[in-house]
Length: 458
Image 1 (spheres, rainbow, N blue to C red):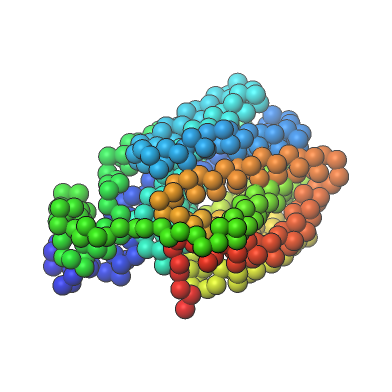
Image 2 (cartoon, helix red, strand yellow):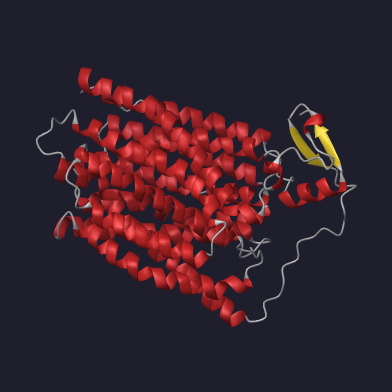
């Protein structure tokens, strides 16, 4: 890094005011992880019903296995995030995803739904080690005033680019093999093997490059004191701890009214669980709904390709656009964000089941996924401000509660899908989502005065 690129206080650009210099290199791992996400999410909702011949309840159980596994591992992960090396935990998560992808591929080759379920459970158990420490590192390396944007960039934006690249890899392979060699299952689903190896390499690279000791507070303090040590080899800035101001500490204030804090915090936790449950009541059945209602009469070889073409743009654009909206949600009142996201999401769910063509369906799906991703980043930002010392536990609790909702939701959706109608999971989610809006606003307003990081809305 060239010294001349800095101003008198060592600041290179406005980006250095909101994140540490190693932030961008750190979040690249989610690009490489994201290569396989889009193909995996497609096959998980497609193959259970249309490859293995399962029912809606079978799909609900498979979709519930991954979050169920995280319920078991998340308390340990949350504790470890605050007490051990975060980058080591991220590496474990990357290895877990690699193993799971290999199991998915093998289960498809031998046509065994139970083995596919084992892979899903194992992914939930091990990949859980990835996200709490990764979100914690993002929070530590970003300014509180741009936290939603940092989280959206670190996960959504980079995963969105990964989705795009993953689609360019997986769609041609899947489509060509489907037309030319439809019985060659190992080759048709071979992108899983490619993404498995890439995950392993990305996790190892992350472990070698990330500096856990460089936090945003230390970096910002060093800029003010001009105590910078430049390292041209790693293209990163380190803080000389011997020269740093010893008075720089983060002290969490005592709560003046613990009762109101607990009311707000418990309400927020319940709202997060119900939100996750509401989303997963219908989301596992989006592909199946498209096939059953809008693709009658199409060839079995063509149907999965059409589904991928409809499904992939929503996944890619939602990650890229939601990361931009993170900046907006950092600038407006949380209650307004909750109301806007909740109402818009409900309207889109209703419109989705009244589409007439795959094109209409694809357009509505894009906006729906953007809204869902934006809501996820918003909640993560709220949780990151509750505590600094226990931030890893906050992210772990957030994920644990989220996974609990994701266990209940698909099971309910599968029952509704099999016993009522294909519209039922969507309609049920629509009404619950509207009812959650005032409850979420209440929770945030009660909790907001007691958050450790207070953000001024201008």
